[in-house]
Amino acid sequence: MRLGTRWTSGDEPPASLPAAFRDQVRAVDRVLDVDPRPKWTLTWLEGRPVAELENGVVVSLDAAGDPVVGQIDDDTF
Image (cartoon, rainbow, N blue to C red; front, side, top):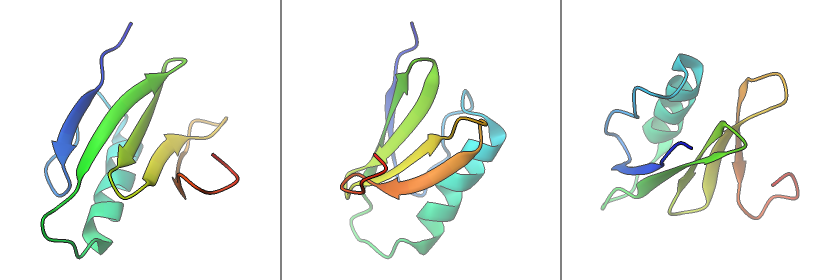
């Protein structure tokens, strides 16, 4: 079992995440213009990381293990 965590947008993502996943989280952080900065929540679903921002942006891995970005209200999630 893996435990999730929380961190503030713009801060360093957890080192336990794959490098490409961390890069995608940083890319989302760069386009945010929000003050105060929202928080990320990391959970693990069937061994795969899922990071969700308080505004509904989600970073997850597709079937090939590549990071994808979506919105919690998208039909894809």
